[in-house]
Image (tube, rainbow, N blue to C red):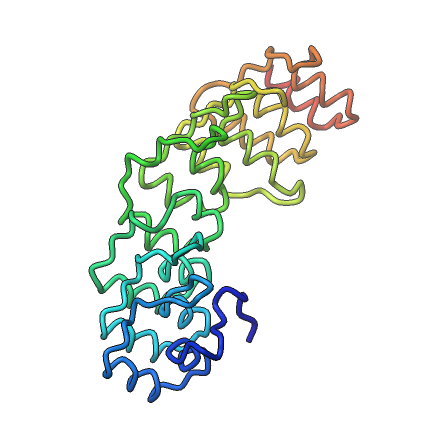
Length: 264
């Protein structure tokens, strides 16, 4: 079992050692004698976080029974017990934690969800203040820019799709098209278009259609042509003065170029 160093107790931390070693009886004995379940290691990890990293569900439940707080931040660490469970996709642990008076908003930051699996996002997002979906971080990024892989639950919850980055104007559709593999058609593209993503938005990379051309995938270009709520404007030029069709022909993607020519 590999555990991050910050969650490994020293020999002078008996409760931490008992949790780390999976010694249920020792943990129970120490808690019954009044050891604080919300205490933390010298490294800054809460005892409940140590239990999450150690993967012992019975000890996690025991700590929760004695009042361990899942949303209590790990001092000096950018985490909490709930955040650690979410990052590890421990669904049983997360559900047990949510049965307590845990305020998800207090410990789960929206930019963290990029690290979570889809089922974790679907469980936690309904518990988050939806007004936070429209906030941007210091780099001007919305949660949707940071969490494309988990965007389904966010879109259903009302996330904004057309907020753009301040330096260049990329929207979520630009970001999605930059990370897709040319050999696959990610369903998220259809979802973004269904929720009104702007297919004509400009960035240093051109419009999303310019980005689609560079994937070399006819199927992706077809999705933008077919599913966009607003007609794609194929006269828009990128920073090189080329339309998406002209870019396709220059790159040697004649099949895509001819498709765009027919659409015009």
